[in-house]
Length: 506
Ligand code: GLN
Image (cartoon, rainbow, N blue to C red; front, side, top):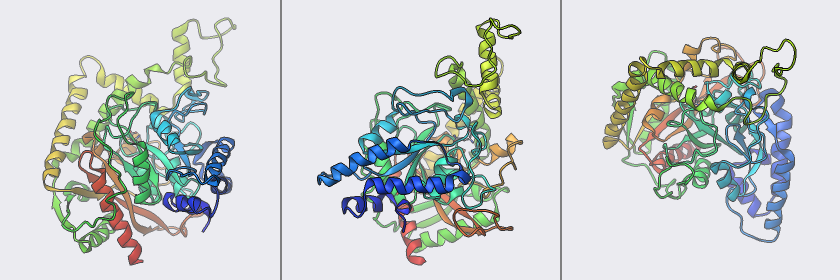
């Protein structure tokens, strides 16, 4: 096995036993990036020098027999939405193409305290708006299972990189599905924590009341390890909870006999759901039954309103959050046809002209669409009809989940109604693209934690022309395990038990 193929746990054990060094591990990831990333395009910036320097420091500690933390010396990729001191952070937008943050966001700060090695910044949809990573100003990421297909989005870069063994783990964000859907499309693990579990401070904001940062990993255990490092109260984010952070790895191996799992009918009966995905999840449920879980169909009737409510609230918050980008603060736009007013023929006569020109050329289509939609639904006369109504639906959805969790320990349902689609297939049709989030967005409205777990492969009708992983004949499928507020422990335990059982089945 190549070093870059290791999990966090395995890599840590290897480092401690001095089987290999952090420099060798980091170099293995960098070599893989060199080999595969021209085709996948997971990374928009590779910080090779910094990564190797950091790895050397960890190796020195190991050589001196100092204890190292479990994430220490393990190379990771970071979605380009998280500010990292001195490293260009663009949100994959032209308007931020020259922004170098003067500080680390809390998540990076915490990861650095745990010995993070940053391989680089990873591709995503511009300002995390999209579901396929096609909205990046720097070009799309390709799915390593079939390079003609999308890796999902918006954390498509982070997910594709882990799937293709370019980074040992990645950090993504999930506002309406952006960790869970790409990890499902790439056949790996993704965890969206409870709203308030992980600090949002220093992460470029899209929908402040929905988004959470979380791990993208090869195993459930690795997700628990990363969550341990990034979770917790932060005085820089008043929405973080003061609740204690348990050790999420502690109870992973506890069995799940008698655990009550609900299957929300509205998800499984949705007509857009690919029957092959449904079948694969029913197969997975057999494993859960064998493990002693009690599985039962149940109903969440408000589900059908979730997508409409989600997009109204999301775009409203986006229009406010993106008002700050004026191409003056956060770095100028390069190569922009912004001619100073002194120049003859310039259309820019005043500051307002400058803003208009800068925002016109600095934002991509989906971002402009979001700002327009959001401004509309927040405007006088429409606020009550759209925004206010959507927030009421959000409350009803949350109450419906709260009620369900009086009876169930976890819910299992599909992540995406469809398998990874072809690049270009949906990008011109925003409404169809929004519907891809039908099973993920409700969870953000309710602020719940949810874990993507792969559950097999589905044969494609036509062989992939080019691929990096798999055999070009199939695509991964997955389910999500939704948990109670702040009960990441249970969903991780349920996921880990399934993963273990599947492994012994093989
Ligand atoms: N597709 C959704 C949106 O554009 C979700 C994106 C995300 O989770 N960041 O809002």
